[in-house]
Image (cartoon, rainbow, N blue to C red; front, side, top):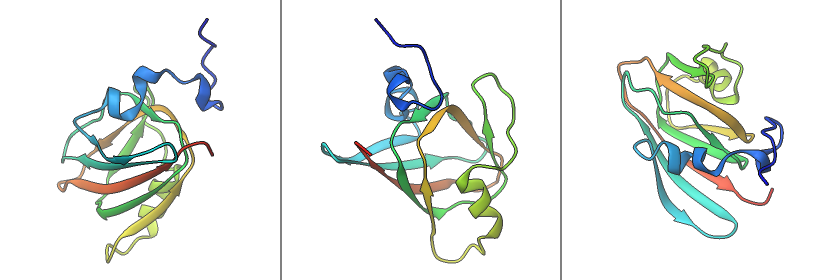
Length: 128
């Protein structure tokens, strides 16, 4: 029996909405073992990811990221820039890389409204 969805419990999140399964055009596995999964994430200008989640905490290293980038709920509601990446982006001067520690992310999607591709490496830590 499937347990009901709980946005605070990543174990209840649908495996079919895992980022690699649900949004394969934007998430590519570079390495995976029982403790880590390393993803390359690319979001072209004007592109919106399908609804997906990231069930493990992670460190996200961006080498290309330009606002505006918008978080959107599965139902289509645009969210204020409250997530770790959005807050860090507001204070980033664009030099070097932007490194952000991320909590597990429940289902949602991201829209790149900028004129530049978003590119980064996301290191997900399993079992945390």
